[in-house]
Image 1 (tube, one colour):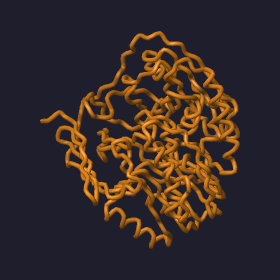
Image 2 (cartoon, helix red, strand yellow):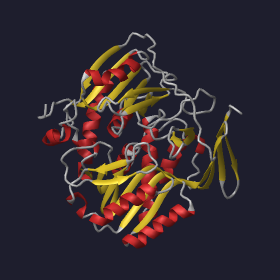
Image 3 (cartoon, helix red, strand yellow):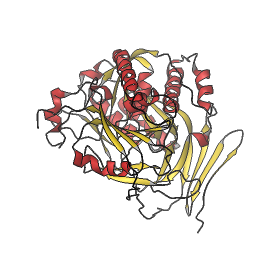
Image 4 (cartoon, one colour):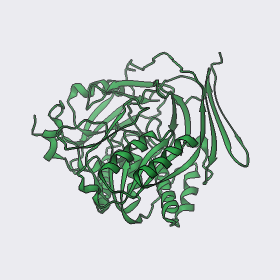
Length: 458
C-alpha cells in the first residue's frame, strides 16, 4: 500500500475539489461556495482520528485548537464569520468586510480592530464545546445587544434542569448548558456556533430541546465549514415545520464530502520521554477575574481542586453590556504577562474548553506569539510529509484526571517559552503529568491561573 499522504486541488468555474489520501483511506471534498475566495490550504487540512463513529477530522488552521495559530489570525477568522452572518441574516454588510478579507489573505497576520455591530433584537449566541468555545465567544464579541453561553462537557452538580443534548458522532457525546431560564426568555433569535457542520444532527438535537422550553422564532447556524448533504439539510427543513421556526445556515466555505468505506488503524505513538532540558517554572495568578464562589460548593464537592470557575468564560452566561469591562481585564492581564516574557518566540497554551480568554490575552502579548489548546480529541499522529498531526503528547486533564487530553505537534514547536493557561488552580499531582511533558521541552514555563481561591467545600 502507498504510505504517502497527498492533498491536491483542482479548480473549475463551478467548484474546487480537494482530495486527501493516506494509504487506503481517502476523503474527497467538493467545494461549492467560497464567497471570499479563501485559500483552502491555509484554512484546513485533513487528519484521521481514533473514533469509530467518524474517523476523519477537518483540522482547522485558524481555530487555535489542534494546530498552532497566530492569535490575530484566529480572531480575524471568527470576526469574518460574524460579519458574514450580519450581512446574510440582516442585509447589513459591514463597511469593514472588504478590508477584513484582505487582512485575512495577508501572509503576515494583521491586528485588525473590528467595530462591534448592533443586532436588531436581543440574540443568544451559543458556542459548542469544546472546539468552538472560543469561536462562539469571538462571534459574540463582534456584536452588541447579544448574550453568550457555551456548552460544556463538565458535569456540574445541583444545577436545576440544565439543557442537555447529544453530539452523536463525538468521542464525548453529552453537552450541558448551565443557565437560568430567564437568560433566554427575551431572545427570539439564537446563533449556534461551531467550527464545522457535517450531518447537522447536533444542531437538530439542541434546537429540538430548546424549542420544547422556549418560544424562539429564528435559529442561525454559523460555522467555518458546512458539509451538509441534501438529506442532512432536509432534516433542518423538517425541523422548521415541526417546531414552527426558521433555520438559516451561514458558513465561510461549503460543499460536499465523500469518505472511503474503511476504518484506518495506526499504532498509538505518544511522546512520553522527557528531553532533559533545564526549565524554569513560575506561577502567575490573574486575580482580577471574578470567581463563581457562590456556587463552588455545589459545583465542586467532587472536584479534588475545589477551586471555582470564573465568570468571564461564558460557561454561565455573559451579556454584551460587559464587553468593555472584559476588554479592560484582558488588556491588563496581557500587560502583566508581557512583562514576564523571556523569549522572542512564545507559545501560549489554552486548556480544554478554556480557550477564548487565553487566545485574547495572547493576541495582546506582542509579536511572535502562537496559540493552541489541549483537546479531548484523539487524532492519529503520523510522522509523514504533508500530514498535519506529526506528533502528540497524552496526559490526564489537570482539572479532571479521569479525562485524557492531548497536545499536538509540540516536538516541532520552535519556542523556548510557554505560557500555560488554566482557568482553575489545581493540586500539584493533577498537573504533574502535563508539566513533566512541557518541562522536558521548553526552557521557560509560566503557569497562569485565573481562579486560585479554594471553595467552601474543601
